[in-house]
Length: 419
Image 1: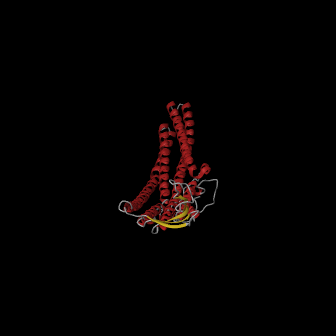
Image 2: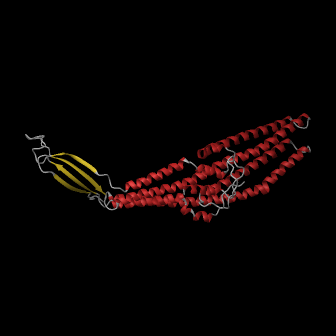
Image 3: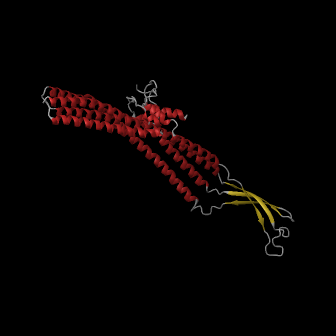
């Protein structure tokens, strides 16, 4: 069941099947790797198992108590320290068993069971959290890798521009300042590429926390083709989200603690059976009972019940707070995603074409001797900046989709990666 849950969480990033390529680290493959042999999930599973065991233990009676000793040994008469001359002197042995009042045993076990349910829900939430964090880190590395490709293209063009400027300077058609400007522009691009290498290394290093050495593999070039987010559907599923279920389970834990506090009005009692051995006299058998007397209920049991009620109220209010927070997160991410799609369309339809036209015009004018090299360099730099800005928008848009997938527990469509 848990493996199928992991697969379903990873499938939140996928849309249609493609051939598996172990040499390429896609977003989906990264999330699947993060859920395999994950220490955090293994630790949570151990916590669940431990709590289930504690539930069985807590529902049992306390261990019997074996007692023994010597009583009524004479110390102040001529017969002092004699085991046989006084009839009251005896060796005793007994067994004492304590019993809980009311249904405390069942309630103690039920409280641990509810705690185990809470830990189970937290494990499911951790699965989604790991999927989300892995996806976000993968996207950071992907963006840095894509940006490097664009900067390398600019470096290749800038290198040609330096050579052309040097030739023009030799022929007397360019100034030394223009040659230096071209060289500085090239070096700035090289520095920008080095910075992107560093950004990619940081993202991959953080990704190793989830997927180990696989973080060093080449990244897939494309992103999944996510569906359009459905706010109504995501909000409708919030009640069954593991984070909310965990807090609902916390309410049940508090409720079990409340019932246990109410059961404290029923006093515990114990029974002890004993046997007394007297060497020269008849032996004795004894049976005694002990029972707690809740004379101070106003300061003990009443206070305990009042505290448990407040804890239950706290858990319920925290659950409501999480619901509100998650609804706000869904609205924020969907709203931002929609605005980012509009901005990306503007880049594709207007900004990028015009920036390219500006560079083409500057190159044509410079070739005809009607413009300066500085105008070409400025136009080329502007085009690169615009392309990188668009890439930032693509990254932000993808991050919103990954974040929204955290709230979506059903895989949209057939699993697979974009080729």
